[in-house]
Length: 146
Image 1: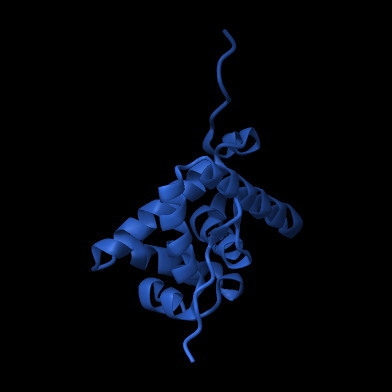
Image 2: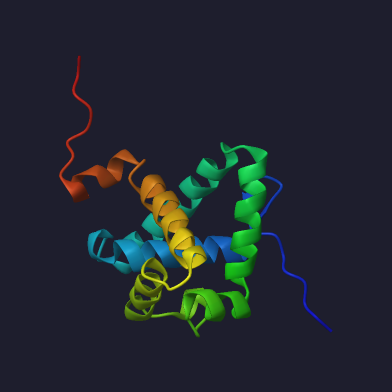
């Protein structure tokens, strides 16, 4: 029997596997600027997943549907291995493995791989730096008072 993919976005929420994916993307792309303390790092990654969820909630329904399909595919073992080249499940992958997987997506031979990288990169970094608490990591003092 063929297992059906579970939607990555349903009822205005990320699925468990989609939240795991965005925590992994955050770890793979933001490792050097995330807090070093394990508890603070976990809190930062949970906050990132919450902000990604809020970002997706504000997108048009057609985009939400496309993202849901992508997140479902990447949440499956076959999609994770075939498109990203990552054998370990998202929450079990090392930072080095995540970094390598995202670099392979970024420079992938297929246009779809590069598009997936850009989508994950833009959603993740945009959501991460939307929180004023993250601005100091990039040297941004915040908006000027008028």
